[in-house]
Length: 460
Image (cartoon, rainbow, N blue to C red; front, side):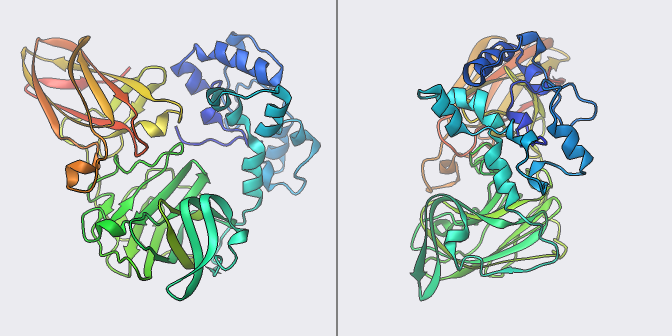
């Protein structure tokens, strides 16, 4: 589920009371009733816990007396961060700061409790981040890295440095955001350098520090098919093992030990990523919704950045490779405890899109129908650990994780590499896929069925 920000800065998509979440797992109502009482001191009966979210038209709300929603709507704003009276008394009553709750609680709060009962409502940080933004309309942004102290740092280290004779920002393991700019469509350019292996990139349309678009070159695989990688981040996880192939990866010469130019153009659903002015990798359809967001720089392992420049408007981006699903691939699954989910355009179910960061296991259920008895082939790819059950009996299990750069198989992509054959009787059959997380590069599944007279039924 994509991030949904309320008028006061809460996150509907993370809230267990949000109607789609209640529908997917009704038992969470009792847990939420207990959790709210434990950390906020009020209790609602479980049967009363269901909310459409305050961004909906004529919604059913839990907080029916909330003064914030009508105030924001009356002022013609999206949320409180845009108001000249921020912070007002109406909002103050509904500000949630984790550190304050922890102090009041007087003990350590389990991470799972924070994720379910507190984090969805931690609105002060979200609103403060939005308060620092201004819209980028036909303006140019240059030299914003001259003073790294002005950046919003979510990284292990961000510091001034000199590299190859140039003053620059040295960034290590994480994200820095430009606090003063927001854009939907933009051209982002920066000079980049590395001493060795690294993944230095540009983050764009940043909804928050856990959800954003990301693209980067990979110097230590220079010249290979994945030297340029599109890697959307969902719920704090990179997902490059799910976004592979010419629709999301490109070959390029990426140098080490000298400065090179990195450019990302983003316009509508397309993004183009180019290194040193060479033909770009064009992502025909980015994974997150088209919307304005913050801009930033990101890396895993140390990298250097200088002379960042952001400009609008953006020239037309030529068409790229359209991602396509394998023939016979399931396009929908039922995820137990969540509900029906759809596969990405390449046929892969991206579980990072739908499930919280605390989830480590998921059971996906699909149904298929045989017109007559016969043999079928199941062809599949996965990340990370998978077991398949057909009509309640396990028929396959295995693991697929990253284990180096020796070849394509070592990357651990969730692409079809496995297959097995089964004799099936005429009628409806249930296939369950149990996936488990083992690393943070994306977890998901693509599975196709092939044979005479076999077809997938809608997930339910």
